[in-house]
Length: 233
Length: 233
DNA sequence: ACACGCCCTTACACTACGTGCATGTTTGCA
DNA sequence: TGCAAACATGCACGTAGTGTAAGGGCGTGT
Picture 1 (cartoon, helix red, strand yellow):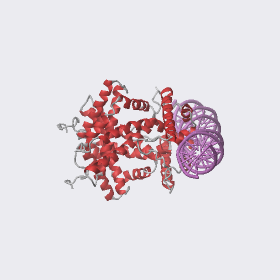
Picture 2 (tube, chains in turn blue, purple, red, green):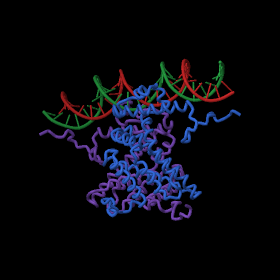
Picture 3 (cartoon, helix red, strand yellow):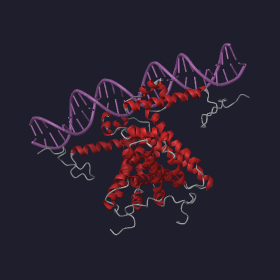
Picture 4 (cartoon, rainbow over the protein chains, first blue to last red):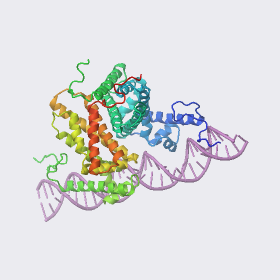
C-alpha cells in the first residue's frame, strides 16, 4: 500500500549521494548554505560576537524564526564548517583497507586533510575561535562529535575483522587519542604558521600530523621531549 | 609612604591557602558554595534543564544579578564540581617525582581519583550530563581546560629535566591523549557500572584507568585485531 | 569612635536567544 | 485540480546575560 515511510521519492538525504534530489531537498540545502555563508561573511566582517542571529537571517534573506529551524544557534551554523572538515577525515578513514593497522589508517586520513580546499575554512574558524569562547565551545563539541563517529567507524571495522567481543575501552581510548593528537597537531601548526595556507605551511601541517600519529603509535616512548626526532631528519 | 598596592591585608586569594581569610573572602566563599549547592539540589530534584537561574538564586538566597557575578551560566556553576575533580587530579600529578616516566605519573594521578569522596559528585554530574546537551557541553569545556593545565604542568616538569627547547607537539599530543584515555575509562565505567560508588565498582574504575594508560603507553598495539596476521589481503 | 572609601549586592532596564503556536505559502501526490 | 504534508513566517513569551546606578556591609586611616 501507500504506507511508505513518508518520503516516497527516496531522496538520499541520509546517504551521501542524492540520487533524485527533490525540490524541497534542494531548497533546504540552498537555504542551509545561504545561512552558513551569511554567518561566515558576518564573522569575517564584524568579528565573533559582534552580530546577531537576526543579522544572519537578514543577510541570508530569511526570517529569524527560519534560522532557528535550521540551526539552534549562531555557533551551530558556524560549526557546520568544522563538521564538514571532520566528516571528510572520517570518509577518508572509512576508505582505508580494513586490515591496515588502525593508526596507519588514522594517519592517512588526517594527512588527507592537509589540503588547501579542506583546511581553509577550518583554519579561519579555528583562528577566530582562539579569541572567542563561544566559538571554541562549539568547536569542542564538533571534535567530540567526530570522536563518537570515529568510535563507530572503528567499531564497524573491528567487527569485520575480529567479529565479536570488541573492547570498548580500547575503542574509546584510541579514538579519543587520535583526535587529541590531530588537534594537537593543528594547535602547533597554528602557533607556528598562523593558519597560513601556502604549500610550505601545509607541508608542515602534514608533517606534524604524521609526527603526532607516530608519537601515539610509539606510546610516547620516553624519548626526551626536547628532541622531536633527531635521527629521522 | 602609604603608596601600598591597594590590598595591604594581603589576603591570599590567588594562592591556594587563605592564611588570613578576611570577612569578605569568607562571605564570597560561602555565597559561592551556597550557589553550587542550590544548583546541585535543583539538578537532583527537577532534573537538568527544568530550572532557571532565578530558581537557583532564590534557593541560594541571593538575587539573580548576584548569581551572574559569580557564574556566567547555570552550567558554569555545575561545572565547578568537575573543575574541582580535575584539579585534584592535577594536584596529584604535580606531586609525582619529576624523574618518573610521565605516563606513570599520569596513571598514578588518575588512579587517585577512584576514590568515593572524589568521584561521587562527578559521577552524578556525568550521568546527568549524558542526557543533557547543555551540561555535556560545559563538561567538555572543563576537560579541555584541564588539558591545558596538564600541558602547563608537563611543560614545567620537562623544563626542569630537559631544561630547554620543549617539543610542543609532544606536550599537547600527550596531554590530550591522557585526558582522552581518562575520559574513555570514565565512559566505559559509566556504561558498565552506571556510576555505582561501591568498592567493587571503584575497583573496576581504577582498573580501567590503569588499563587505558597501559594502552596509551603501548601505542595501542597490544590487541589490535589488525595485528601481525595479514594473511587476508 | 567616626568617617571615608571600596567592594559587593541589589533593582531596574534592555538586548538577544530560543521556542510554541497559528497562519500563509510551497511542494508532492493522487 | 484538489488535498495533505512540509515549510516559511510573524507574533508572543519566557529566559539568559549585561550595563548601570543606588544602597549596605566591610576594611582602613585619622
